[in-house]
Image (cartoon, rainbow, N blue to C red; front, side):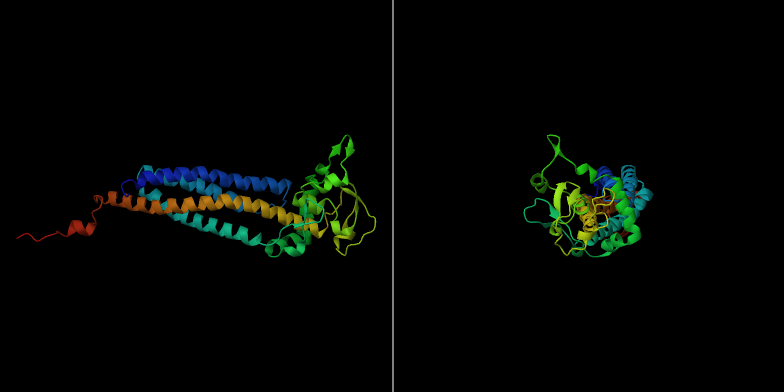
Length: 285
């Protein structure tokens, strides 16, 4: 195993280099969603930094293993340790801040509705901050997520029955329509007649048919943002966990390759320790 460790670590580092591409891609994907859908623009940067770091360090480890460069291998092992710790921390953080909360099914509706009281923690507090929410709601408005909901059947807006059977995403459900319990009457996807408002939900009075307001100030919209973030982060975390397992394996084999390189530098034959060389096995008279 020790003889082949350099070849194995070279292969594993080339493999982790390839795997850093999905991590980087995941960060870029989150960045795209931050600009167009989720509208939280700071969460993707740790993932992008980790992806770039893995890419660079994998190249260093690959070169160190192929050319038996002890210094590069030392740099690789030192840096990879902190990258693994950072990736573990990021995965734990992602699961911790998106642990609670999920959509609830509504009677006679295919879509789910989201409630801010079901969420808790640091991410909820950040979304609830008025100054921060003004930026998020403005981003959602600019993304045209609600205006894109419109569908026509034979040149006419879809019926209420058809709309109720749609599988709306969290933002469409939370930000683009009033909560079902409020008793609003469907006219089209983003226009609802007040009728008799029966619900005690504070969002019932926040709904506005003005296409620039809708339910952007509603707690259901904030819950929709949190639910959308949870789905996005959980998808990316699956890739991160797979990459983490491979990185740990590569790190263990890298330690073996590092010891192998040091043995070669010290002119120690494979399997022969320095103490064995310096101390004869029997006494000659």
